[in-house]
Image (cartoon, rainbow, N blue to C red; front, side, top):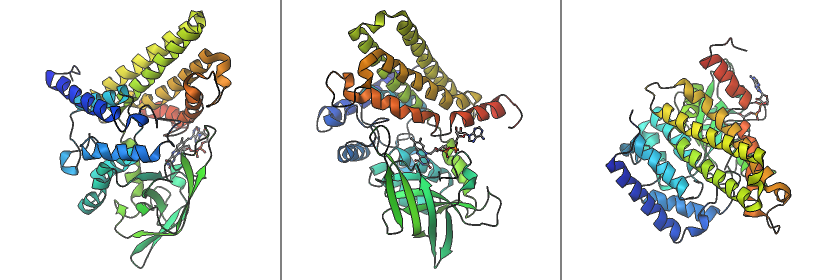
Length: 390
Ligand SMILES: Cc1cc2nc3c(=O)[nH]c(=O)nc-3n(C[C@H](O)[C@H](O)[C@H](O)COP(=O)(O)OP(=O)(O)OC[C@H]3O[C@@H](n4cnc5c(N)ncnc54)[C@H](O)[C@@H]3O)c2cc1C
């Protein structure tokens, strides 16, 4: 695949840039640069309004097919969109779980009725979603989910506990993995249910994080109810659907993430210049090393997108690579700040008002969420290198 941009693509870039500049220059200026990782719990009303503004102008779900309410962008145009979004420092997307996880799952596995019912709310930003997979005893070992559901009088009745559920405190709906057949082997007998969050049987308790925010939660289901047809795939066949959701790797949006990291790298360089740390040969070496790895991340993303394979081996290193890269970038930022790195937000003389510290603390989680580093290494060992299973 030729990944150079055509004149038509460049005209599209202008269109995206103009739209973002107009929006973020006006009413939404306050959201600029906000709501990213480590800052996800901020400016809810403003970012929800931004989500709906994007939806009203056709700028959500840009990768989805048009017939499903998306914008049907080509891969090139998706790259441009995500890059311009990061370049404009547009706010972290409040609807990203619906757009990147549940929506593609419904498009691949849902019924026409489910697609008609749920996709428009994601596109418009009127219905927010959270992901109810992990439990206290089921993280890496997801097949061990113990939350259970049974059909009673034409409805699923759900009981159990989920944990680390990002954005559950905002969400209208949760896609829940629940055991619906306890006599079946672990990978069978699990169903993929769509459960409304705003009902008596759902108790959402925020978990206070070391960043000071509470962007994820414990969620307790006690007799929570959902309609019998709110099951995606066959009852008992939820494992296949759940793995499908996890496979919707954000190919093109990885490039936006890369640009976001590059913006951060620029700021670290600016901070190092400002306080003279740029003259330290070790700091210079680490800055150069990080920049090289950022370039590799971009080239690898382009290689994955241009591959004709469904699951190219290069895709399997992506998560491990960026998680470690960003951890090192955060540590570099802390070392560049020096003594100021221990100052919290609101403290005078704190460059970025605590943003760096928060980001550094938050990104410790990158080696855990979406598959821990150890699990990623197992995947690379077994599926790419062909090593024996552990
Ligand atoms: C910021 C954040 C947001 C999250 N958001 C969500 C969400 O919205 N919804 C959701 O469902 N979940 C969410 N999670 C949960 C996340 O998916 C789990 O934390 C992750 O899957 C790891 O599971 P665990 O925490 O139970 O750890 P465990 O699976 O108990 O792992 C503990 C340790 O053992 C290691 N380990 C486990 N199995 C193996 C193995 N086979 N080989 C080698 N080492 C192994 C792990 O690498 C880890 O170091 C989130 C987590 C974080 C940190």
